[in-house]
Image (cartoon, rainbow, N blue to C red; front, side, top):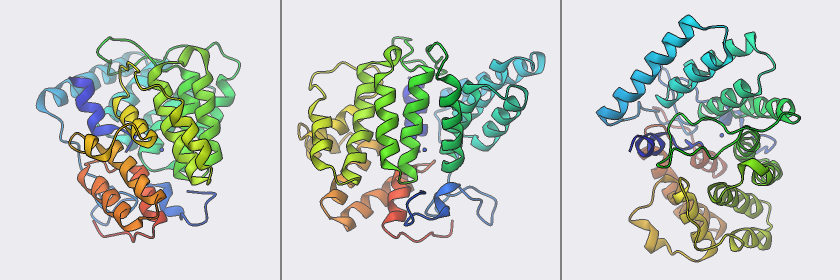
Length: 317
């Protein structure tokens, strides 16, 4: 219940993280403050505090208090910075989380773990270029390390860890590269993530297939995109990435828009919009993308990036 509620609020904009594309300006590198001091999306709409159910907020705030207490008694430990930053992130306090990870990196400059988490929170804060730099450095540092599972702060129903440090670093490097229009880097990151031995799972297969499909389509490689989704089985059992799977089955032609529409979350609606976009139906895509961004308290950066590419003007908050 807790994981579902939190992921529903914080998924990539999920998440979920342009330059070298000259059509996407430096507006896509940060969620700038508005004149009233609030953070805004890439299209200028206000980012709101997540509307957590009371029991979820109480749990998250209690976890934060514990992490703060641990930091007070053990500031010499790498994990103290990791968990304090992550607990702030679960509450969508991304700038504060980034500061904590940065403080940790002053003490542990060679920490691929702190770089991985700072990169993730920089992407959530729309600092895409900085996030990519963190991920690239983390990938260099972790290359010769023995891979290990990454502890999850919000466990799935089986209390089973799925992501590893190596697979997650490459995955999020690839995902965030989508924001800057580097679609070859998206493909490279997803393939590396998918092929890390310890990180292989049906959940990782469907999430990497989603981003590989979009990257191939962006590069005009439609046959390769279709081959990616066609290779995903129709009968997978997943623990977490159910809406990624639904989106992949939609791209594959196994699920229709009508079948998915009633329960469509932001990710599935983003898939609908991208399908319109690839069909040349830009106004239909724009309408869905705008609704996705405006209806979510924390926005949805992939939709925001696409709106900028469509020439969406920034609006006052």
